[in-house]
Image 1 (cartoon, rainbow, N blue to C red):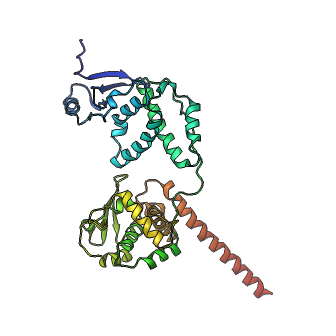
Image 2 (image 1 turned 45 degrees about the vertical axis):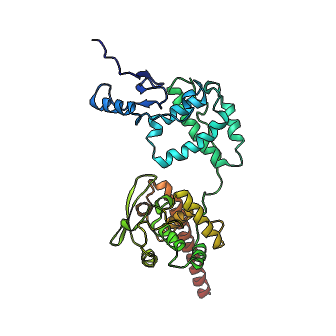
Image 3 (image 1 turned 90 degrees about the vertical axis):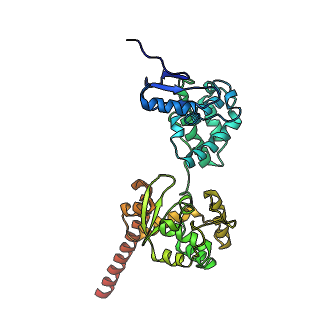
Length: 351
């Protein structure tokens, strides 16, 4: 039986796992890897989207002039891959910023010439910013994986390579004294106090806090659709949050607005809230630390992992285990010390 030819600009190849992949490649456009079987109605719809530059968008200026086999060419292919295009927009933006910094320094280099020692040297130069180095290593692993699939390499120089072991627990978790200091500096009725209450009593990220508005309040609940994970939550309205919201004018649909009357971006809100923390004498505190404080409070109240996840939207027990472990340690330590004191009282009475 004669095999039917693929449409114009479409070809197929076997990746490093032997799996046949079908790819759209057209000058001036990003590559597109099909998710459907050739010539089916779904495939033709996907193919038409490629021709219309929707599934395979135009490349950035100069991208079509990249040298074949170079890091530049690999990056362009990665941006057009299903692995990258399937990510959420916010994640793509984060990954792109990491990759572009690497690309600016090494874009003209041949992918096949990259050795393990080169990667280690690049990461070694980033020893003062270990978290950034680890983020870069993760992106390099993804790029090298694609390079294998495309036949640009026969091995992965980042295989089993480990990043820096990070000290500490990341963003500082607010304690009760710090929360009290912020509330004292920023009273109810102001935007800063509303921002604190939204994050502290919902346990959400700053990207979700800036998206919240009156339209998300239904009765005694506030509805959240997390930007990072697309998780949908319905969180009971904490009485303190309700008190703060009752004192907030309903001038706009969104709770938090800039001084220019526009909704905050996540980064813009983070910078603005950073200034409010500084005003309260809390340079160690941040917006993200409030999400951790919310989880800490829930754990100290005796909530289970499942209950904490129902509020914060964390996906795994491991993500909340550190909060419950710390709370259990304090609770058990209190019980142990109380038991010791009780024994001493009995001993004194018997004497």
